[in-house]
Image (cartoon, rainbow, N blue to C red; front, side, top):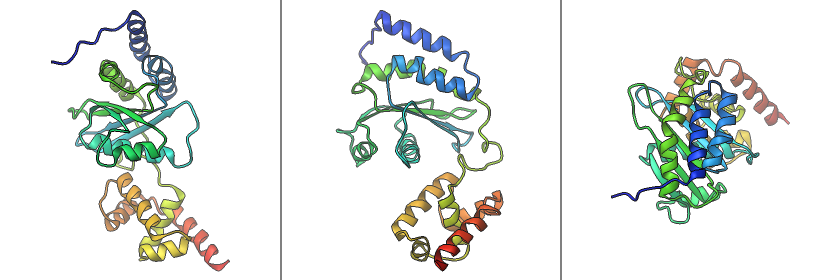
Length: 254
């Protein structure tokens, strides 16, 4: 039997305040202020990653909320890790990075955190959501997991009330491809291998491969041919690819 969690008077006040404030969230700015204010009071953390999935499990929205400046590339790395945790079935977990198996702990530590608290709705007829708090002020326990479980329906409903993500309706990716990713896709369209793209861009073939893996996850595909087809269907390369290829050509000429 799970241990009974008794909330202190202060925790009850924080919880009620968070729930009441969440009822009024209707836009991205309000969602940010709520999660970084009243939710933080009950569960202090450094970064909150919110994942919203559509019917069938396709990623429809990602929100990465934090009150401090993250290192370059950290937000994308956090999102990638959050997706792996969510899709790995860890929908109700308090993860201590020093004890987590299978290399997960090392990856959390490399990103500058030592714990993660995660909970999700699981699949629903309208799509589910998962919320991951990175870097809790104290090592997460069953008590913290219970607080997040109590907040879960309110987080889920508040996220669902936000205006539709720009790409959720037409099947476009959850985020725009970066300039470097678009450039790499452009060279793939030209038939270049990873080694050739790496030489053209002055990076290693392994770095190209890592970029491709992020592109595949963003587009919801499994290989370069499918990625190219998706980009063509969504017209992602019509302008940016030409700019990227031109920039690379200038680098080659210099």
